[in-house]
Length: 320
Ligand code: ACO
Image 1: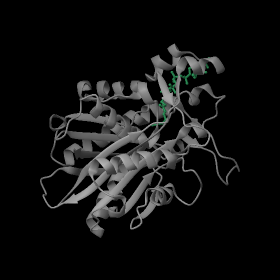
Image 2: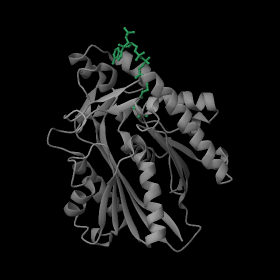
Image 3: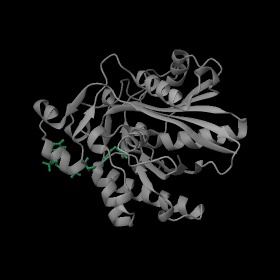
């Protein structure tokens, strides 16, 4: 048996906001944003467009590519830190809207590492509950949770969604999810390095705050060590990997990680310039873009890694 990726898609809101447009309302510049992060633009959801709306479109396209009817979906798992409401979940809304009547549905929140957490949860549920078709969606509207007067954070984020249709097949050599590895560290300094203050603690929606330089360092350490450990545990080396697709927070983080920790930069997929930081949606968005660009091809072995608020981080090896 193998849990393969039968369909992949992504979806972005229509509105594109460039760095130059941001600098008209904020004391910043394209030059500052681009040199520090690699970001050139981001997509921003409309006022009445929420994470589940982006997820619904991504889900329907992925199901179409996989040739799976919504009625045949067994479970819907949605990774989001920016759910439309406290409850019901985005997953339940998506289930209702796409007509996946047989599926059970729930959200998970593992911040920017949520897609990797979602892959791990889906993989183990498919094995333990004998599920055939699982829809994994990552849908985020971070721009609804930034303080637009804080130039140190608001320029970093964008909105978007991605979806995988995961399917159990009999052939154990079919590839799909080869391994996943998850980590958390909620000790005080790390817990406080990036957070959204919203909720009962302070009674408002909550805006993102961040200790940028600490997060920069944690991101490199966490992503690099998780990649090394997952490769070692699976008796693989970086030579067995065709493409490294990390969480797209910041181009400088990704390039520094490759340089300092000796990962081949030519295997690195970077789409930060197009999407900015879309939290857990960034890996499926980057993968979809790399496939559309003709870089990633069917049969390639991919190494995903991500780190986010918590701290939470992890890595996954998949063959598509
Ligand atoms: N435009 C112009 N100036 C700015 C801006 C801006 N948008 N933002 C901050 N500055 C100013 C600061 O006010 C400061 O000015 P001062 O020296 O007069 O006080 C100066 O630039 C330097 O500020 P720093 O915060 O020290 O800038 P730094 O070089 O560290 O870059 C950045 C900031 C880009 C956030 C960097 O720390 C970083 O990339 N950190 C990683 C954070 C990240 O990517 N987080 C994503 C979320 S977490 C995740 O997804 C894993």
